[in-house]
Length: 165
Image (cartoon, rainbow, N blue to C red):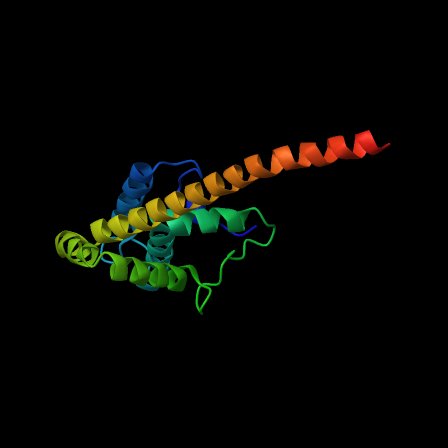
């Protein structure tokens, strides 16, 4: 069985963001090539794996996609990691659309990234997640409204059929 990003960071799949961040920092200190007692090449490989695991698990959108990929037996990514249908590309497209609608979000992102890179990533991910949740909520509400209109018509049609027999 292949190890998962959770195995690499030594956390459970239910771990909160703060736990993932703490595990990453502890492992990064322990296995940093300049501090590790392992051979440099081995420490660098381990550090790359730790970094990759953290990048995926610290990003809410990528983490959901990754978790979905774990439900299969082969542990292959659910979404391609590159190309037009990759998570990164879809996020970039959604972000560009959002910036066209609200250009001030870009300057907010730049300010956050100037302080700390992960704050910018978190800001962007949370905005995209919030927008997608609102859109989904509107869609569900719209479908429910349409279903309310259809339901009386269906009852009327059913009653007409029973009256004909």
